[in-house]
Length: 395
Image 1 (tube, helix red, strand yellow):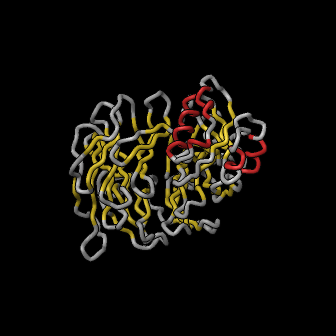
Image 2: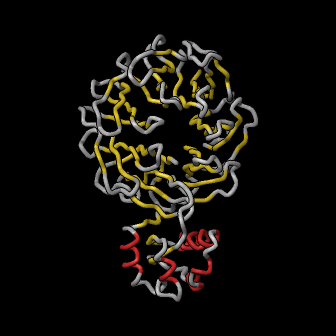
Image 3: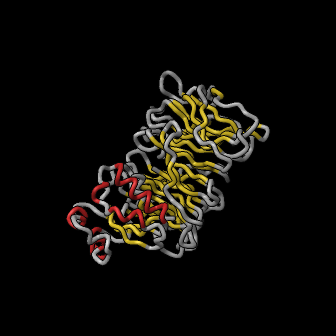
């Protein structure tokens, strides 16, 4: 279920004034300070809301008889919990098509940023946390769009023929890199976030897959398919100058370490995927065919690496236990530790900005749902509970 917040505080108070719960003694004055109107559609979510308020020291503001409302199907409840944490953006198909949502991991309240008949996906927070870049097929082709954190302003950035996808913010938030298929192939483009003219920085291959910006914004890492001479990981400056052929195998999903000294990536060899580490030279430069460190070695696939904000730990997804599970390891590949332990797939780990938690997608209850857990795997908490697919979290 999604716990949706509809409208701002003013609208919430108006709607809540019709609710008997809101009229409980002392409740109205507290709500005026900070509130959202939550539409609670099952008892599990109601108990979750109560628990989160209790954790925040606000238990005495909740009428005690709320907990007796187990059969409630649609109850308006105003909660006075502050956010206290950055929100997670994700994709939900709960309304029949893919829409962009944000959810507060403390209150469990999800708010739609898009609400239309198109398919919206690939949400990515801007570095300042004020905007979300995403892909939409609203124009017929896939295009890169921006939406503010309240869902009030949506701006289409790309409009060239062909599909544009996989937007990535530059570290300073001034530019976006993306993949464009406007000429039939898949090439890397960069444009300013205010909708400036796109700059094409690759044109050599029919199959480029965007990976990541370097933390200083000097390089873009991307993967390339094609012939033996073309395939592997590549680096290029965002102005299209300087090209480094980093690796020469079937490699993809490059992710830069926070200090910019290393790149973790996935290598497919003889049908198996493992994680490797590429490191720059001591003088700070990158070279062609760089020396590599193998981090994982297992007969089942290891995928989706994600650096912790402090650069000490790498989270990843592995299928070594018969299904997708989330593991962590030290940046040198040591101390591999399993965090999720169930028979369903757990996928797409994303670190919180402070590195103390992770968001991920779990199929524990069937369709994908958004979960969070501590960085050691403890306190796993389900945030969304509906019959549709929720996926692609970004924190």
